[in-house]
Image (tube, rainbow, N blue to C red; front, side):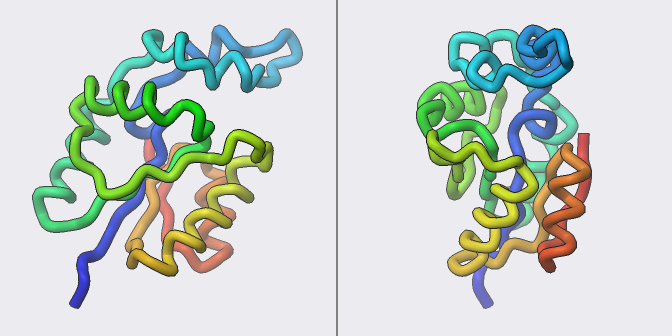
Length: 147
């Protein structure tokens, strides 16, 4: 019997990015993604201790941890640095959106998690986006809304 995994989103789940999001809203309330996905603005974020504790608890109980984020691949170094500074130091894989991928999160995450599940047995994905969770569930992937 192999190790079982759980996956977590970052923004809204492990990281409170509301301040960065508010700064990057356009007047029509659309997100300026170049603004939001700027490593120089990550200082505005704060950790989500309850969810980070859940991640650590699951890790301590023998589950593998996979992180699946809509952040761009070009943000890998600053993302890992931020996660470590917030106490998320041990995870098995970090899957990030290709820089040229502009699909909505529900579509992108369904695709990437289906691909990840070819190598890892993921029991559940934790995400703050109800549309993403709904899409995952409709594709046969167990997912839970967490904030």
